Image 1: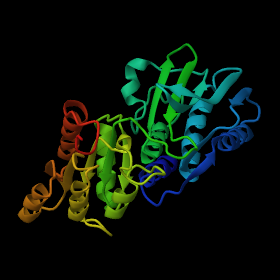
Image 2 (image 1 turned 180 degrees about the vertical axis):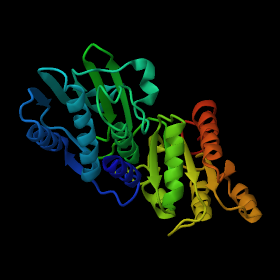
Image 3 (image 1 turned 90 degrees about the horizontal axis):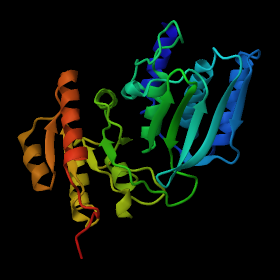
Image 4 (image 1 turned 30 degrees about the horizontal axis):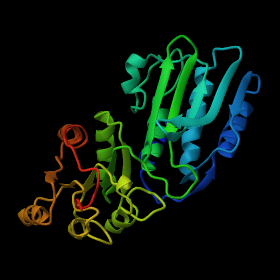
Length: 325
């Protein structure tokens, strides 16, 4: 029970605190985790094949947590084999650099892929492999915190599973063509509810959380370039709270609409406040939608799912943020 509580607390903290993005030696991080795992069970025969020169722009501490969970999972799910291999490497996926962790352990059934990154979701029984189902949920939150994407593949009973991470490589000007959601929320409890709702709705899109109005104007996607410098960095939708530190939500909305590059950027006001004046002002400033957060979590999760379906699936947005020349 104590470990479960610790893991739940870690999961909730992933989205809090400042991030320090810098070039990180992923090879060294992975080698450190591998050495620790070997030290715990020195009698096991496990070959770690870690590609040299792996690096990315990310937060060192958070990526360390992600690798601990990824390699820890690979270590656990190869434990029934007399010898095993765990590979950490890099390749290109649809033209973008991705990092992967692959093992030749128990594998998993792709029919249950939707549960892979869900909190407290398990694809194997507790008797087969003990655990609490929080590890990959933690990995997903770390990756989404960086505005990136994670997915997995596996074959049950054939000794093969793989988790891939699309991260910004360690070079300037990295951009993403994925559909990104920016959540602007300074209240930790509301942020936690939103993240749980997104997980429950099985939203696979990359999620970026920012906590004040200035941050969304400056670095909404965590890239090296200034916000909206290139139309390719535009998110699919911004979920904007109104009561924000540094720069209020209304002023953020006004500035986004005043800039030709973000004039058409979809902005949904997502707030707990019920002032009618806020409602009218939001639409006058160019909000695309105004949603009051339901107090009940189930209703809130339903609202998030509807927002996802409309803005990420049904809605078609211009490929450029500015006016057509």
